[in-house]
Amino acid sequence: MNTSIDTSFLESVPFLVPEWDRIEFMLVGCGGTGSHCAYTIARLMYAINITGKTASATFIDFDVVEEKNIVRQLFCPGDLGRPKSNVLAHRLSLSMGLDIGAINKPFDVSMLEINKGRGLNLIVVVGCVDNAQARIELAKSLDLNIPGYTYRVLWIDGGNHEQSGQVLLGNTATFQDLHSYAFPINSGFCVSLPSPVLIHPELLIDEPEPVRHNLSCGELAASQSLSVNFRVAAEINDYLRGIVFGGLRKFATYFDLPTGSSRSIYITKSNVLK
Image 1: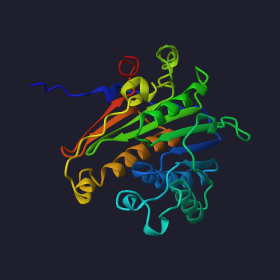
Image 2 (image 1 turned 90 degrees about the vertical axis):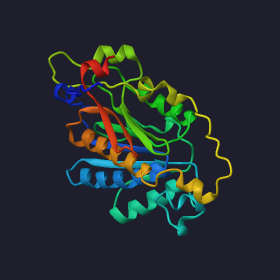
Image 3 (image 1 turned 60 degrees about the vertical axis):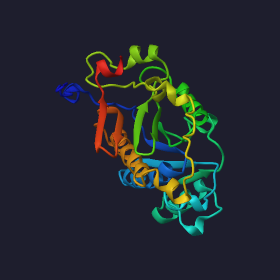
């Protein structure tokens, strides 16, 4: 029996993002996980704005609210037939006095505007999608980074199965750049983390739909935990707070609801550069 204990957190270093005056959150996917993330992003934006810095957000989703979404996603019957991105952006902008836009189209990397406005900008792309084609487009966002100390686009990817999920953070598209810039000499911090698709290339391949014979609508709804999307969103929120306020020492988190287990991969040279 393996009784070893993971002590890599003790060897980990914090993740350092470039200096910024304005941060833009790009939430891609406003469904099961994304609708929960929208609320956590809004509260984080409020916390940033009262510090004197500026936070804005854009919610992106091409889908509309359907009856089947009401139970699992943060919508209500009055939202039926309306675009998901518009519903969330409008509701949170009005209720919290925030700058949140909406795009009712599939995500395209051209939607990122790195040099928008004056000052130093940071863009955090939060992917809450469930298909490979969307992640292929999300992965292109990291191609906009200039290798070195100017990684101004970060990608957080959240995904789940019926009872488990993972959150991955990265800003570097190639292993070559990762090995060249991740740990500046004698710095005591990390500036470069592997793209989610470098950690898990299978994210770019669609999984076959599970075969479910003779299940009622109620049984189909019950097959996925009602809390799994909320859990993914909570983990994403923790990553976002670490990016904004500092102290983040992990870049991948996995959890399993039936067993109650959770583990993270911490930012050490051996973990990041392997």
